[in-house]
Structures are given as C-alpha cells and as structure tokens.
Length: 282
Image (cartoon, rainbow, N blue to C red):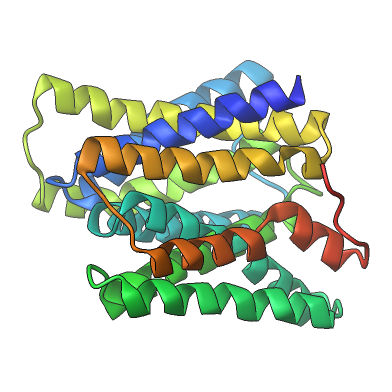
C-alpha cells in the first residue's frame, strides 16, 4: 500500500512540474495565486469538516512556516520555468541535506564525517551542472538552491509545529500566508488564460495538494529505504518529460552532476546518518 501511494505521489508531482513548465508565459505570481486559492479552499473545507478552529497552539511558528513555504513556492516555480525540468527537480533534492545542517545548528545534533562527504558531493553536483550546462546562469542556480533551503526550513519547522497542531491546520497556513502576499503581484502581472490554461492553473493546485497527501500516507505505511527508487523514478520522469515535451537534452557532465545530487539528497540517507545508522538497501 505504501509503495503504491508513493508511486501515485511521484506521478502527481511529475504532472504538476510539467504543468508549471507549460505555463512559462505566466508570471510565477499568477501560478502561485491559483495554487494558493485552490489549496486554501481545500484546507478550510477539511478544517470545517473536522470541527477544528483555524487558530493554532503555536501561532508564530505557523505563520513563519507559511512564509518559508511561500518563498519556496515562488523560487521553485521560477526555477521550473527558467531551467531544464530534470535539473530543477534534481536540485530540489538538496533540501534533505539542508535539513541535516539545520538539525546540527539548531538542535545541536552532530554531523558525521559521512554526512559532510554527502554535503560536499551535493555541491560538487551543482558545480558540475553550472560549470558544463551553458543554459544555466548563476542567478538560476542560486534561486534553485534558495528554493531548496526554503523548502528545508519549511519542513524543519513542521517537526516542531506538529507536536502541537494537527497536519491539516499546519497545511492551511501556507496558502493563508501566500494568497494575500501574491494577489497584488498576480493582478499586476495578470495574463488572461485560455480554457486550457485555466485547466492547467487549477490542476497545479489540485496536483500539489494530493501529491503531498499520498506522500504522507506512503511514509506512514512503508520504510523510507523502500521508497528510495521512487525518487529516482521522479527524476527519470522529469528527464523523460523534458525530452518529450520540451526537447531538453543533457551532456554527460550535467547527468553526472544530477546523479551526485540524487545520491547526496536521498531522504533515507539523511535520516539514517542523522540517527547514526547505516542506510538500508532496498
């Protein structure tokens, strides 16, 4: 059951990334507006259905998490629109490494020599991609890494918030924060969408919500090590989509760089190293 949910999540995230890529003619603000509007509607419905109030026990952390998540969405959508799909998706896999660094700095958890090795490996991957893929600028790479940092920060705060508030309440604050922030910019850069584009804009919100839902279920039902192949599948799907839909190609150095990032950012490696255990092989 867990592997099936992870497969569904991987496919949904893949479709979401492709939808954003297809909407490269729209500003990231308008895309984020549709995602926030749809996500907020779903979350408020779930809160009402569960009989929960909007106010959380750790209000400041909920708002802070919303700000980090909003920054993550804006920067990731920019990355998807401006660099090859597979490269954008792969650099996003740096987030687990940054979570490990945050755990060491904030929670004073020791980073092992092996952890430092994977951190160096990850940044070596970035250098390979930046150094040999002439389509990428320093700004593009910087925004992609910034997105991974913001994602890591948002996920890291959830570890604290979830001790006091249910997940549905935590999820609500992301669109609650992003919607008022993005609306003025979305109006300023507004582009009238066609019927197909309205469908894609709406699909992004739905796909993102349900992809996260199935991802959560997968980790509740299956060991993390058994889910590793699906992360490789996600990158492979991104490469396939980039090739089929956007005629993207990659040289050998870029492929090696992406492989370094996949290895270094593997979620179960991060978890195992943080706990002082060797990662399991599925």
